Image 1 (spheres, rainbow, N blue to C red):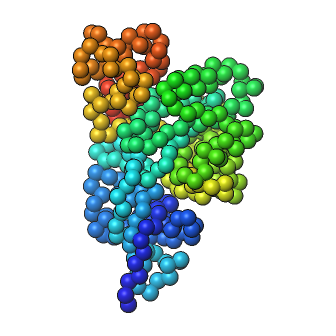
Image 2 (image 1 turned 120 degrees about the vertical axis):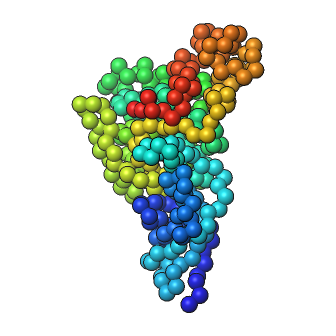
Length: 322
């Protein structure tokens, strides 16, 4: 029996060796596996095929395309992707998602607090791999009864708006700001990322209550979140667009990034570096460094500069996991 081919399916989920695909904008998922040829290409990647990839393949002879497994044989060239150092396999890398219109890093206005080195490693990776990034500040309603966190929330807003990023303030609990967020996501494929407990799944449920993604309260003892999402999965939004819900991650190791290129991915540091005395200045201890001068004058936030220095010292992020 002749194989039935398919083309340009989008990967919407991976669990172990199984993948779920659909033909966007239709949402009729079916299951697939990798061909042996693609499995052999794993090499330095933990996942040769990622959520968001567009793929070709075929249905096994005699199978029903809506119920039975298909076989992925080819991956389309990626428009972009996000990648990080694999947590468990130090020599391998993990592709987070591919073909993204944007990535949203979710922060909590209260607890758990996301360390600046984590935020900045994520944003640097977005800059390096041509993925537009937005910062979503969730739980803003909690500032009314825990005002001690207002300075923290204001600092997040000030630092990243000054760096040129859009910062959107929302509350998954009350719905504040969610209309604007829905418009921001409409017609796009967007990754939602952040540490556990910041409310990624709660935001997704508020955007589209039919999703019913699992959520969990943070640990009051340690002010940390609990993992409720265990794999990357794309979901359609009733308001338009698609989101990729992601597991809470504790570290974000940089890959394939030279030290002399790192400052290029901090917009405010890169702009100031044009006035450095020496070409190739790493903005650490060199004389005549315009970046260090800007930090002293507080035109570049000390938190961002500290993140930059930490990445120079430890690009894999082993010392600074949350």
